[in-house]
Image 1 (cartoon, rainbow, N blue to C red):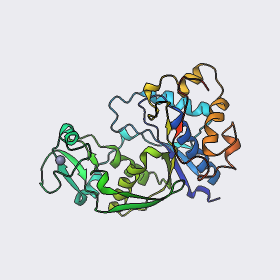
Image 2: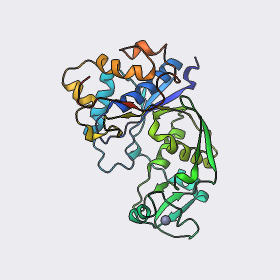
Image 3: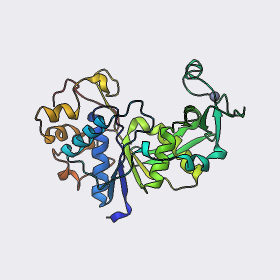
Image 4: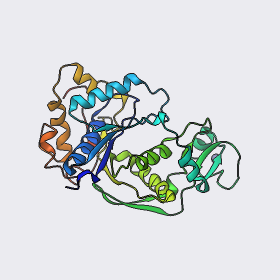
Length: 284
Ligand SMILES: [Zn+2]
């Protein structure tokens, strides 16, 4: 037990229903913190969501509560925070970029650093990723090495002045005292870019655990297009949360159908490493 030294967070993005991939990642985040006797924060990540809706946010919170995923404190949502001080702290690592989405798409989809040494006075603000690779120890996947060239310099503030996720999430985890991040494996590369930002801030980053991706039968990441395979649907149809956990907990190597029973047995390295294929017809 490490007591209150451990601080985790649930960070839902209010853009749609909670699907099985979200349940898996939030369940793993909950189990990791509860096993350590730590604190779990809830932070709504709505900084650059086109149409963040309070209705969706409230629905997600009800879904989490229904599943038994409890949190100890809700911290300010991203849209209520000011990231200007963090942006200023990163000033010497940033530059302005005037490239359009279309230009980047035509360059192959990864931003090639066109504006790095031009010295534009306007445009979006990008973070200059260092050369080489970032290595880090993932609690589930083990040692990871991500070449930063493959990522493209992330936008920290859009040209319309809206702060972007890579800046917000690092600033929030630092401000909230988060010591461990648990989220889906689609964000492994994003983690590498974020670690470069942590380093530029001279701050100690949290540990990372990336839970397996959950894909639909079409091999694509679960999303709105996968219909009724989401928590709100099951909850409104009178399903029991145990039915959801009976599906999800084995993906973490846990033979349980209730979140509380799994605290003692949670092992971040257990369960499948690769992606999981889920039924998406709404059945459990
Ligand atoms: Zn550019």
